[in-house]
Amino acid sequence: MAVISRYVPVDLEGRRAIVIGAGIAGLASALALGERGAEVLLVDADAAPEGGSVEEAFGRWPRKKIPQFRHSHAFLARLRNILIAAYPDVYRRLLEEGAHELRLLDFPPPTLRPMTPEPGDEQLAAIGCRRTTFEWVLERHVASKPWASWRRGCHVTGLLADRGAIPKVRGVRIRDGRGRERTISADLVIDASGRTSRAPQWLEAVGAARPFERRSSSAVLYYTRFYRLLPGVDYPPPSEEATMADFGWIKFAIFPADRNVFSITFATHLAFPRLKVLADADAFTHLTFALSGLARYVDPAVARPQPVDGREVLAMGGLENCLRRYVDDEGRPLAVGFFVIGDAAYHTNPLYGRGSTQAFMHAALLGEALDATAGDPFRAAFFLNDGAQQEIEPFFRASVAADSEASRRVGAEPSSALARAMDSFFQNGVLPASRVDPVVFRAFLRMLYMIEPPESAFFRPDVIGRSLAVWLRGTSLRSRVLPRAPDFETTVGALERAAGVSRPDFAKTVA
Image (cartoon, rainbow, N blue to C red; front, top):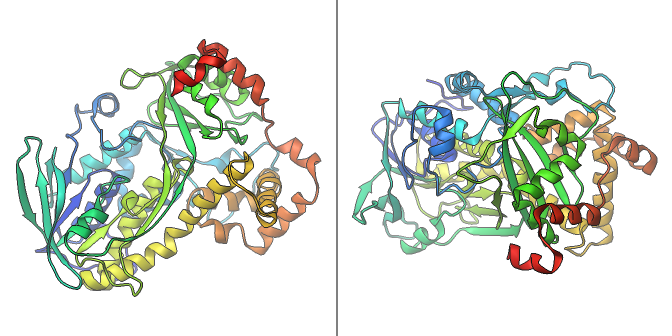
């Protein structure tokens, strides 16, 4: 049994669990339940993977319910460490399919003196992989289990529940692709249906209260393009030129993936609508060549663009941070036997790459909650909520704070004196310190990789002291160690010319 838990694993044999949604959160939840003995039925609106390889999955797997399915993804060190400890077969198969370990400690900023290895460094490695490859491997692993079954092409339309002061969920109603409806009973129902979850409406329909909810806009648009290295060509060696940076009006990063594929993503703030021109392939290409850290990767002698679904550039917007709690103020479940996992409960700005890792963390917390309560779904709701507040909500708060800082930075949100001081400390203290001080660099990696929440990683006395020392040194050090932003007007004008878009007509083009 692969279950890793702080408690004695509960035996769920004889119980049936329905998991709504078979994305990463749903598959992780299925593993947490199935390996404790439950019979697991996954209900998913999309079809099964097409073809028998990761390349066919990338090109052909229809995942209309997951809009970010073919965008850049980050599989952080916290997730890698969960896989190695609990699901080593999954991790081994990922490596066999071309995924690889990304160790930023092996390539520290050139302005940082050589890093001396320390205990714990082995935890600081992420996974370079396409989302399609990760999910294809995970889906195949779950499908091989005798406890797993699927209902594909089906939509959950509501919950079955015994009404009362706290309704008791006993199954779901589903509708298949032909419009036929039926009910399926279960002992546990897990909603892992993602950002568009209808759990609040389902609960209200059976007489339960709607969950507490907090939302805030991420105020960003994303533009992603995939590339494949030419045969026999390797990635360019590390250099002083940035392959990821935040210039306020534009953010960018390279995402190395499996099978010699990588992607580049630009994130722009809604305050700069002219940057919607990046949806045009020529404008996207122009910007990659204008940023020297990216230009080496997209050189025609190194890599070629790889269209996805016939599209050169993938765009995504309408993103937000959202938190929902499915217990009341006293920790009692809104409905007994109903648990909400992953993006359906917590979703954040994809810029920070936390979604897949949070999904596995949340699924592991569900398993531990059932372990801690001997499978009692009423008490498990409290344990799950408590664990999520400790392990996941700090990263939600960090995402909201970072998005607010980004909006203040471009003048899209008002700024108080305290906020300006905190923003300055992070931008002019912590960030440059992470490029010259190994203690701050490791703290940055531990936060980036979700090993440690920002509230503890950056607020240790040694990290504060070292960052403060850099902050007080003024602009001379920062100008040497931080990448320099190109001029906005010059760059955007060049992008518009590359796309053949004139300023007066541009609003119509991107509306």
